[in-house]
Length: 328
Ligand SMILES: Cc1cc2nc3c(=O)[nH]c(=O)nc-3n(C[C@H](O)[C@H](O)[C@H](O)COP(=O)(O)OP(=O)(O)OC[C@H]3O[C@@H](n4cnc5c(N)ncnc54)[C@H](O)[C@@H]3O)c2cc1C
Ligand code: SF4
Image (cartoon, rainbow, N blue to C red; front, side, top):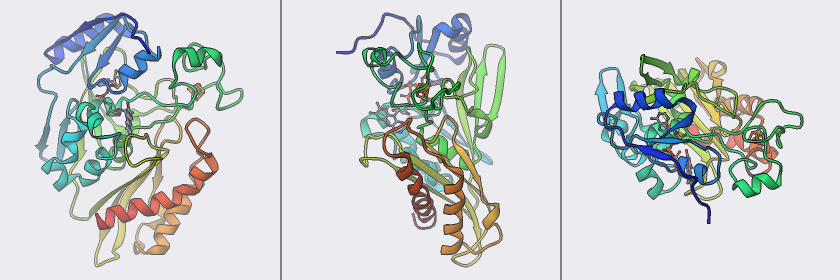
C-alpha cells in the first residue's frame, strides 16, 4: 500500500485567504482542488509539501458565466459540469467534448478545470512509486540527475497530458492568475513552458481562478480527437484539437483557426492553418493539414507505445478531429 507522508492542511474559504496561505508558505505549499492528480502524486512521493491548501470550499470559483464576448469558467468547475453545460453546448462545444474524454466518470466528477490545466506532466519514468524510481536511480525531474528518455538530456521532456489544455489553446482561451499582490491574465499559448519539470508559468503564491474562452462565431467549428488504449480512464497517447473558421456552402472555405497537438512533450504544439487558408475544406486540404502536423510532431519514449506508431497516427487524429468539428 502506498502511504501519504504527513503534511498540514488548510481550508480557506476565500481567494484572498488562499493566496495569503500560498504566499506565506511558498514552495512548501501545494494547492489541492479535486485531488485526482495531486493525491496519487503525493503517494508516489513526487511532491513533499508541508502544507496542502485545499481550495474546494473557496467561494466564487465554481460555475460557467456568460461574460459578453467570452465564457468565464471558474477554476473549481468540474469536468462533469463542463461536459453537459448548456453554455458550452452553445458557445464552446469542442471544450465540452474534450472534457468528456478525461479519465472516467468518477474522476470527472471530482476533477476540476483548474486542476486539469495545472496537471503535472507525465512520464513512464516519473509516474511510479518512490521504490520503483529509486531502483532506477530516479531522474532529472525528481531526485536524480539523468533523463531516461533523452540520453544526456539537460531538460525534462515529460508530456503535457491534459485534454482540455489542447482544446483551450486551439480556442484562444486565457487564464486568470491571482496572487496576494495582484492579478494577471495569461493567454494559454503563453501559459505552457517547454520544460516538463515545471511546464506552466504559475508562480509560487499564485492561484488559477478562472479560464476565459472566446465564444465561437457561427463560422467556428471545433473538434477534438484523442488516442488512448481504452475509451475510458486512460491518459492521451496523442491528442489533437482544432478550431476551424469555415465559411460558405459545404465543404466551405477555411478563413482561419488553429490546430494543436499534445501528449508529445511538455508544451502543446501549435500548427498554423495558413497552408489551407482560403482553400475549400475538402479531402485534399485535410490531408495537407495531416502532413503538416506529421512533419512537426516527434513523439518520444516518455509515454507508452511506439513513438513511430504514435507519429503515424498524427494525420489519422487530424482527420478525426476535423471530422468531429464538421459532423458532431
Ligand atoms: C486513473 C486516472 C486517469 C486520468 N486520466 C486523465 C485523462 O485522460 N486526461 C486528463 O487530462 N487527465 C486525466 N487524469 C488526471 C486528472 O484526473 C485530471 O487532469 C483532473 O482534471 C485534475 O483536476 P483536479 O481538480 O483533480 O486536480 P488536483 O489533483 O487537485 O491538482 C492537479 C495539480 O494542479 C494544481 N492545481 C489545482 N488547482 C489549481 C488552481 N486553481 N491553481 C493553481 N494550481 C492548481 C495542484 O497543485 C496539482 O499540482 C487522470 C487521473 C487518474 C487518477
Ligand atoms: S522526461 Fe526524463 S527527466 Fe523528465 S520525467 Fe521523464 S525521465 Fe525524468
